[in-house]
Amino acid sequence: MNITDLLSAKARVQPDAPAIISPGASLSYYEFDRAVSWVAQGYRKKGVEPGDAVGIQLSNQLQKIIASMAFARLGAVQIPISKSDPLQVQIGLQKRLGLDVVVSDGGAFTNTEISTISGPPEDFADYKDIEPVVEESLGNNQTMYLIVATSGTTSPEPKLGLLSHEAAVNRSRLLSYDKPDNRFLSLVDFEFIGARQNYIRCINSGAAFILNELLTPDNLADAVLELNINYIACARVHADSLVQISTEGVCLFPQINALRVSSTIIPDVSRREYMEKLTPNLYVGFGISETGMVSLAGPESIRNTPGIVGSLTPGNSAKIVDDAGAPLPPGEIGELFIKSEGTITNYIDPAGSHSEDLRNNWFDTGDLAEFTDSNALIHHGRKDDLIIFDGINIYPAQIENVLYRHPAVVEAAAFSIPSVSRGEEPHAAVILNEDLPMFELMRHCRSWLGVRAPVHIERVSKLPKNAAGKVINSELRLLVASARKN
Image (cartoon, rainbow, N blue to C red; front, side, top):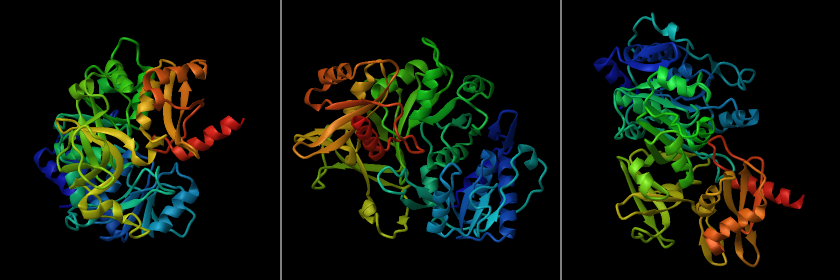
């Protein structure tokens, strides 16, 4: 199956239902499917063939969705290229992959030898009166659909993996709250795989996908009402921003059915804050670029179980093992392995450098987790981030959760610094909303953590993060080391 077959199927059974919505404009499922075929035909006439590798560098969200689906219909494999990345990163990515063509509205590739073609029309009105064309979807289940880039926090540059159409379809399996009457808003940037998974799941359920480029934290609450948005997906960085504009004692989105927050560890204190200030209908998702969404926790389990990331989603299996590879029982923390029907086929360039991650169809996530008695997952962070201090295992999330209990702490990140005599020392960096002596925070941590408390806490003005909002520990160590010298 080609991923665009999902769209064609919905266009046949609900042609007039809204598929894509922006303030003041929309495309029905019939119009969306017709637009994809029309654009695909245009790109085919410009020489795009099945198996070609295509870069997508567009600013307009409607263009991004239609171009992406058009290339998928042609059987070309694609990768989004962010304009916010440095020029050398953009050019380096093209050279690394040997892209056949880049679809662009102007940017890094305009004055290079790289072949470029223009993006599709950017206005909804341009798709209203186009002639229907027949453009069959090409390829099969194993045809490559997307080049997936990892977050890049654990390697010098992101690893790149190939995702097939079959795996992408498997990732779009419906969850409990995926309904055809949903009006779905994703605040995640379209360059990330999570945003693509969101709109493909919308297509599979027959829901309407809301474009976010005209929305800001200041007008979002009004837009939710005006556009009847009832489902929002975002990363922690977005949820934290929404908390900042909320009014004390008033829920910002009381009418929505689900707010799904994912992409990084979410402290329990933040979860409570989201449920109090944003919506009680909070869902926490845990996913990996290589496999898609792995698990999902609903409101009741979030209230009752600290750190929970929920039960496994359809198509996923998991095991938690010790250092020797032996399975661990519920309640014991070990390394998390995932077997998923949505897993990438393989990594590309340098060939085989990460093949051990995919051994025996079990993906080595590099994460630490435990099962509850009900077989749900509790996530404890990256194995690489585990701090072994005087022979004691300390999980950064333990320290961060305690720091967030203090009302002066806005953001916190725990990390290790090597010690000759003690192995690794636990440290932390914080952003505060008031002047506070660090010894008070140290005392706060010791009262909760005892010997697992950080040996030093540094106040910083910001935490170094990648585009996905994840803290880059290597840069944080340098930042704190420099601050301590001064």
